[in-house]
Length: 381
Image (tube, rainbow, N blue to C red):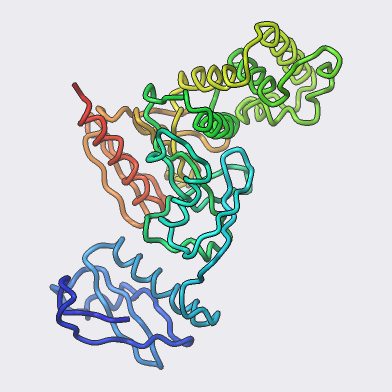
């Protein structure tokens, strides 16, 4: 761990030799009054051979990056990994749940991304995709954190490496590229089933299009009553299943309606690509289309309630995690200011209404908001 006098990295001041017994930790707030001033407000300490060295950063996010980097270095020493692995094969999860193997000489996120992008061969819109660190919660929801170009994707721990479209500008998609269409369709299906709320008629229409895409051909011999009884959850959104999934009369009606509508779509002679494009177009009518979702909670009457925050090109959207119902949306024009920390995301809407959300992903939320707000400002005419 080398440190210099300033950002020019010319005047070296010293270094620390990390060992397997080293550690990095927060400094308890009770000790902050004894720390020096004028060197940064966010402190942490590195412990080497019983000696503690205190370090300071200007911002909380910088402190977290330093602590994560030092912790990773110590773990690598403990594991006997003294340099970044080379010639590695990375399993990259795709939106359609397939897994692509990328053989790359380094574990740098940019190199792995370029390899995946070349393999996928999407011709348009590749700049809106990214490698992400994805995970699935016990209530079957998928969330992710975006890798930056310099990140090391080798040691994921409990997460999985995935390739997702992370920026979506509604109305600007060119779905003439069949590979982009297939990826966009698969990602939209997953978001629809997990997070979106639809009325019954729209849910049936989307399920029928999805069935047509999956089966290719719908016929009256194979696709009859009982065909969807075991996997209805793969076609109907969770928001509907949570309300009526235990009602056999309702679910039987859903299955019949989906099969009947799929048969009608079959009669139109629409191609698979046309059905995928129609599915996406219809999904774009939902205010949550194109969202990146984050785990958040809010305190109400001294009780911590779980929510999901969606961020897309139109604004912020608060979803009840238990029912998947859309609680409220905030268009960007209504948001006056926002801020974030390592534990919170705050924003103020018109009328000086203050919202505080507890989350570890405040920096990530800020990143996505910044991208969309800059785009809107650049294209406001």
